[in-house]
Structures are given as C-alpha cells and as structure tokens.
Length: 153
Image (cartoon, rainbow, N blue to C red; front, side, top):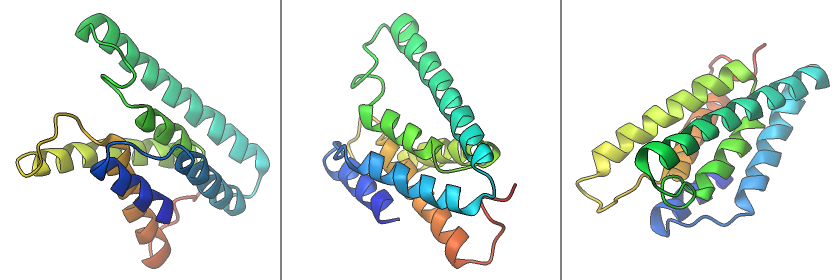
C-alpha cells in the first residue's frame, strides 16, 4: 500500500512517478498473489493472460490516438507511468479479479477526475495515481475488513 501511496502522491503533485516504484509494486503484488494461490501454473497462466489483455488494450488505445485523434501516443495521449502501472497490476491478481479491478479502477479514476476537475486545473487524468489510490483502498479493504479474498479461485 505504501508503493501505491507513493505513486499516487507523485502523480498528483509532479505528474511524474519514479520508475522504480512500478517494478517494486509488481514484485509485491506478484509475491502476494503467488503466495496465496496453490499452484505456480495458475499464477503463470493468470499473469500471461493479464499481460495479453493489457497489451490488447494498449494497442487499441495506440490505434485510437494515432488514427482518430492524430496525436502521439506516449506522453501525449497516454503516460508511460500509466502503462507501467497497468503491467505492474497485471502481475498481482487472478484474471477475473484483474478485469474487475482494472475496470473499477478506470471508473474510479474517471469519477475522481470529474469530481476534482473544478478544484484543480488539470488538463489530463493522473491515471496511474488514481488507480494506485483505488488499488490501495481495495487492498486495505481486503486485508483489514472481513471480505472475500481477492485471490479466491
């Protein structure tokens, strides 16, 4: 949760996140996921599936930015930190949980951006930061509140 908090604060304040936080987050989430599931096969299958899904989404976003918006992709339409956060998150959860958390994180980010838009002069969404906040809240809820496990098979 500390890693997510650092990503959130850096993305909000500076709109630039230290690169080492993303591999650190991936290692932490991957360790918790691997330690929780029963088989290495399920872990590897989930990670590969999640990575493929993120790659597909990024390719669609790239095509949209390049051909529809006619803008450069990285650092104009989509930040490198956002991309690294997506891949770090893909290592940490079973595929169904990942899809639900990913979609929920995007929705949470949109709502938070719209709610704070009038208070802050932001032209773009600090997506990695908002999604890191969302993941931190979900992890805190999962660990500290009696709720179903994020890693239930």
